[in-house]
Length: 290
Length: 179
Image (spheres, chains in turn brown, purple):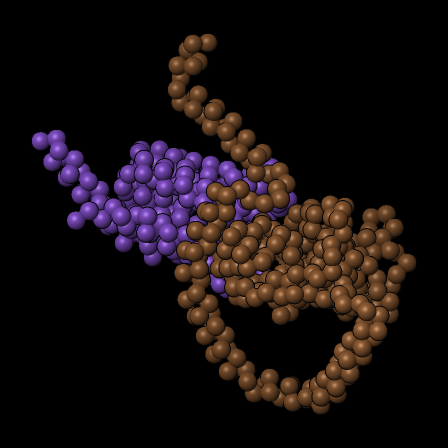
């Protein structure tokens, strides 16, 4: 036995492995907030990342502008053809908005599931390996960001806030394969059909919407948006479009393959969305997020 | 003049580039399923261990592993373990071979392979990914190796010259104290 302890290298290795396992176990458990050393390191790293991100955004923006220029003619033609439609649509939207507000006033109802408050943020980093795909944005606790807020781009929803530091926060993308990544959605048919986003098909690059009742007709091309019923996200954030539908293993429910509305290749600016409606207190049992 | 202070600066710069790389690299130009993972910090640590000083490479790789874990992974111990482990294996291998460019290149790419497989093994064990080994090799490892090789070729000579220079300086200073 003493000989065993004489072998210094072996002891160091063993202690190291034990510490490593303990560390992984410690950090794997569900945590409500980050410890202050973690926050400090994140914020400091965020400062460095911002310095690199700013010029990168500038160059990327310039390239985009040049690409836009080369496509101007084509786009202009297309836009012209939609312009007439647009004028009518705008009038309709204004009218409906007004009507909606008036009706709400009559009911004395200020907030509904769809109302939200939005905050702009810039992306300053993205995880290297896309296994736990996450973004880091330059807004944190002092800007009012909280855990589990939804994050969207102009095209649609991209994820949720996973953890918050003082001046930075981490966004977990929808494409991450994690069991806690569930969103209650509605598919816009003649009447809304409810399902839950559960997982991402990496090969086909599509989101899986599961637990759709098998007697509901889901068709290709239907739009999918958050339902607001999960208790965390506001209603009406665009998720994507149904591409195909499959019956699940036992034929009790259906699974829809949904092409995300947002582009997941590259992000520059995102919008963090805060739900105005109160969250249910037993948040742990709701579907969204937790 | 002692130029040791450039090492932390380089580390910070490579960290910043690595953080923003995935967001801006147009990987869809090559193939939709390919994933290019930047391993610039690892290349830097390997060259540091080979041409300058093993011990300082351990310290830097350990600290940066911790930072990367906290900032990106939220699971402490993944990069924290594999950065120093890879540096250890590679510097052991380099002790028995000559540091020609070709050999150092092959050994460094081997180091990236070890590192990527190690991270993959951890993630697989923790059930963060369920990718098969075949698709991991064809969709992640090869693109990653190709991309990092390009980067490696660009930075190899400047970094090697820099590390050799500060090593020479350090040895001279040591010699001065001894006499």
